[in-house]
Length: 430
Image (tube, rainbow, N blue to C red; front, side, top):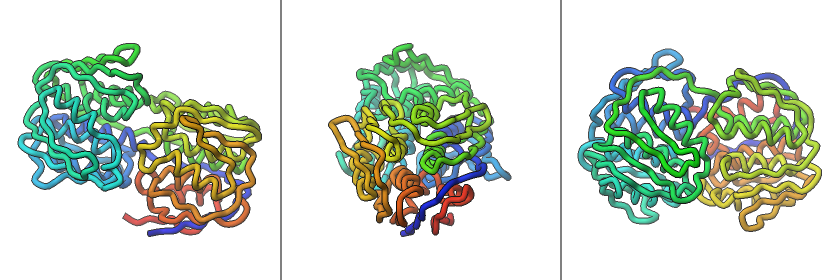
């Protein structure tokens, strides 16, 4: 376990590269597995979650080679039966993408996960696959899932859209290889739509046709189809970059993050508009984001499609003059931690006036923030949000178990230090 100490920092300055997108890295790895031939992936992210996906695609028969600054992945048409259980660790994306993929592999695939991941929803995806002819065995709260594969029959299925968009993405990956076409009926409003569009973008580049209705209530997947290899360059990650941009906003700093593109399906690009709403000056181009100015106003944010930004928004709101409201936060109760409770509890330790009102987080700013010992509840985004808040707090803040940032942004503390943050610790070796 690693602790990190954060001391007050007057200002940040400089330029860093945004980390590669975790969401895109997961998706291009899965698509490369399903493509018969070699795909090349540049600027890929190495973190705990993407390592889980890399190990999974190897288990299904993909050949993975590191060539300089890119990965070369040789995928196969007919997946192999994994010899050992596939360990998804704490990666929800790995789990929810691999379950439908396992239905395409012959025989029984055993999938295991960390206990923390077993508390997150998975049954709706298994029920949807059952509609399509896939048998599985799983007991609520267990850390083992058994998928009895060999084929996806095809047909129609119904699934909720307000639990996890990763369920739908997993089906989009696997169902084009079903025996007959698949129709997915989304029976509640789809949240985090941009993640589904991201999946559609990736599989389309691999030659797969996907038809999504305008209201996102129906997705049609012709089958059978074949994936073709494709060479990717992974974009920078707005989800992770949001926490560096928030740190800059809190310290009234001017910094630039390169590798972020204005033309993206990443929903968390919305951080740009949220920062502008707070009074910051933000410039976004096809190559970088620059931020300057200071927090002038409270914010109102609908988190329905951007749940990963909520901890950053809560930290930002602590330094705004007025009442900030973050709506539609209920899905955050099923993330790496109960993020609604985690972020409110930890920011409160630092002096935040933060309240939970049913489906809404309310922050009464500006708050007199002070140093504290922060427990991120093994949640990378809680650790990053509290670290950003600590930069302007009075006194030292200690983040315990700070290695949890390895889940998505292993170089987070290093990057903040490069920008001038007064941080001790946080160097992680692989």
